[in-house]
Length: 334
Image (cartoon, rainbow, N blue to C red; front, side, top):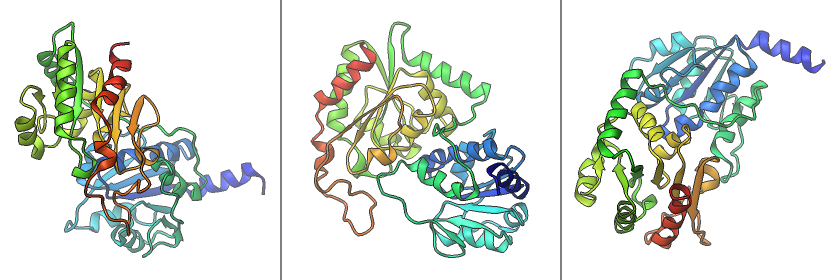
C-alpha cells in the first residue's frame, strides 16, 4: 500500500481521539504539542482531552482541543465515559491504571500508553534524558502522527485578565525600569536554590534600577513575605492563565526547575533556570532559556525510582551568585 493510501485509510479511521492526562502544570503544558500535532495530521478528527482541574485551567481555550473535560478522584465518571465512548483511540499519558480503565470501559479499541493495566499498545520507557514533549509525541506516533514543532501552547488569557496584569506590572515598576520576575520555590525543596543567594541577586538587581517581583502558589505567600520583604509579592494573587500574561510582560524570569518555567517557555520572555537534581535535557525549555547546572557523578537524583534523594543538595548549592549574575547581565544589560 502506498504512503498516500495508508494516510487516507488512517484519516478515515481516526475520527475521534481522546487524550487522558491527569497531570501537574508542567506536564500538562509539555504535552500540548500532541494536541497540535493531531490536528495537523487529522484536521477533521475530534480531540477530547480528559484532564485534572489544574490541567483544565491551562488547556481551556486551547484551539486544538474540541472537548475539554475535568475530573478528579471521586467525581462521577459516567459523563467521562459517555464523552469518550468508542473513540478510535485513547492516548493515556498517566502510569496509573485509572484513566486506562475508563478508556477500557468506554470500549475504545486502541489504548496506547506507558502504563501496564488496561493498555493494549504499551510503550517502552524512553531514555531519562529525552526531552519530555518528545516522550508524549512518541505515543501518538503509533497513530501515524508526527511533528517537528515542539513549542508549547500558551494558556488562553481573556482581555480582562490581560488588563489586570498590565495594571499590576505598571504599579510595580517605573517607566525607566526593567521588571524581573523571580520564582524561588518549586514543588520540592530539593530543587530550590538558597534563599540567601536569591536575596543577593535581588540586591544586585535593585542596585541596577530593576524592579523585582515574585510569584508562586498561595501557600507560598507567607514564605515570600517573610524571606523577601523588599519585593512585590504576587503569590496567590494571579491565576495560572494570568501567570502566563504576567511572565509575557516582564523582562526576565529567574527560577529553578519549576512549573512556571514551562509557562515562561510559551512566551517570548527569556529565562535563567537554575537546575540541581533534575535533568535540564529532559525538562528545560529549548528556546530563550539559559540553564545553569553543575553535574556530579550522582546526578540526577530527583524522583528516580530506586535512587534516594540527596540530603546535602550540593549540585544546587555549588552554583554561585556570581555565576547566575553573569547570566542575568548578558540578558538584561546587553
